[in-house]
Image (cartoon, rainbow, N blue to C red; front, side, top):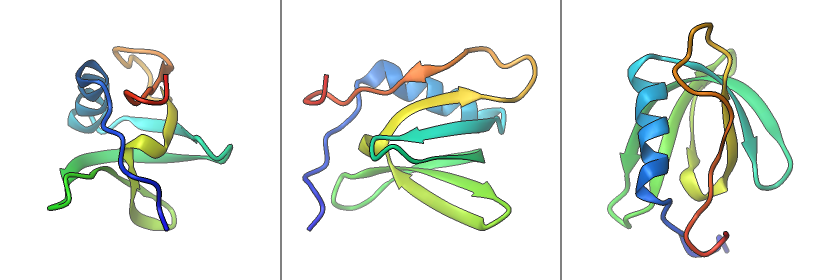
Length: 92
């Protein structure tokens, strides 16, 4: 059973919105230690209030629940931010 959703701090959403708005290619690090590269598409909120980042890479489109993110690093030249540690309210 998945753990209860822990919303991100509001200021961290800004980085995700910028990444999606500009279609940044991101190095995405997850809390489970895995990582991958994908293009940020958009975010969505499920009826359950869980929030997701929608991404695309060679494997296709997929989504990651925001509280699973450890960090995002833009790989797109000229990106307006560098590596950002994502931190949910209860996880530090």
